[in-house]
Length: 266
View (cartoon, rainbow, N blue to C red):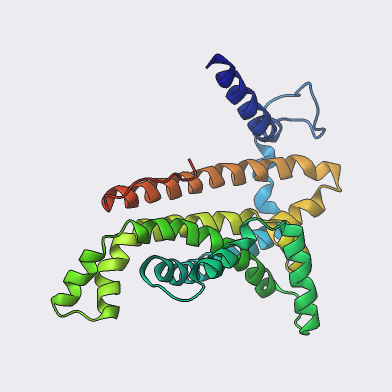
């Protein structure tokens, strides 16, 4: 038991120690990322709003993340609903094929999308990034929403239809409110994934880079690194908050429908 505890401690240290360095150097007075620290300052955070290109990349990333989250959740609702309630030929292989982007290396997906888009004569833009992000975020939404739909008691929908409601009104008035915690969780997760994703955005972005692509470009300038550290600190904090909220909504949804928690993100 003690060996397992030591292993978990070392694993967490290896995983989170590099992230812990972000706020450490973000509040460091010096411009060189090295020890010893030269003092405490918040001026790197104050410089963030004074960089127009940075603000533009933030707006681009937020726009892409919001649209990606909405599209991914809509597709995820359709797939999860079909998988939980209907039987159709080749159901297993089809649902498994949809989940393939979860295990494919992103570099392979990015290169394949770039080749296909260029072959179709499409110009690289924010919409091509949205297309790529939707492709990788949809399986995550399906995984979350599949649990929500499977935990839903079919008798509730049958009772609503017996009382005179149609299929669409039953879905809108009964099913949708019950799976709403899962929908909110899927929205938050897909938003976070899209906001932080770099590889696909790097290959498919056009004239307006996303925030991760912009930060990658700034790493070539040593004097910009402390500002990048400051922004990275904000992004890590925001990502932790969003993922925590997503897990809270997911667990509330499972508890609300009396289902068994099959595990989540936290």
